[in-house]
Length: 331
Ligand code: CP
Image (cartoon, rainbow, N blue to C red; front, side):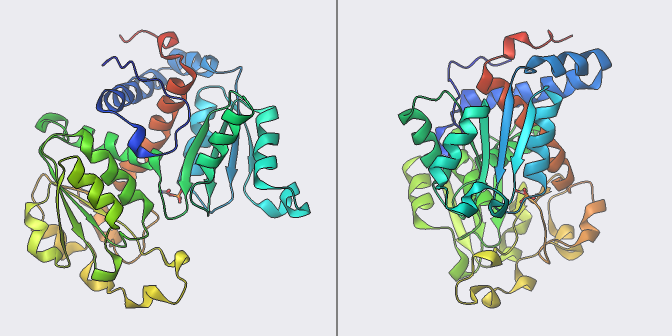
């Protein structure tokens, strides 16, 4: 396994990850999933963090991030508590967000949170530092802003898919859809500065383009990118196409009605134009932008991505708690 001297405590933003740390997390993910395949290995994982408790505070809807974190905790023996609806917590009585987080930190060893608001995980981490509580905060999706753990599982999926072709380095990766409000594509794009000679192609309508902050970040870090509204023009050159859905939940004035689904979707006709060894990714859940008929194509990686999520999140928890050395030795 690649050794990394990087410590990992709060997980807030993709910009905190270095290449050695990403490589280490990918190797650790493979190691955990391999160990878990054997009965004895699964049992040893159950004891790895059996003295720890986790809080899953998910006040914005989630299926796979919640379930994969919950099950990653259970794989490692971590006991979990959850709040998924603030109307049944004391927030409904007027308790402040910070007081709620402080209360969670009285009972658990890690807080995993998904929020409608941007910056709330960072605010929680700052609170933990201020009150000197040694409780890591994991951002499991912060409004339109970031989804760093999704980006980690996406990196793992890309690396595994290109395992025999030199990994992510040198690949052409398309990101398509509502790139303005989609946190998954943004977080993944931020991580690309860690890879050599990657070229990004942003495929989106003018009013749904990537925000300028990310584009400046890519330029400042030497990551090549270009933008287009025409998928057909670029599809044949892509090694991966990362499809995303329209984020209509963030509409303030019906913005989504202007989105032309037919031009920004992957169906059977588009699949025919992709390279034979290209892959199709999607963070899920999907909408009309990804035809279920694509599911049976061997290039469809999104269900694998979903499964990778639990293992990457287990690896992340192992790294945060610093128990990698206690993992069973590789065969
Ligand atoms: N990809 C993702 O974040 O899915 P959920 O919203 O279902 O957690």
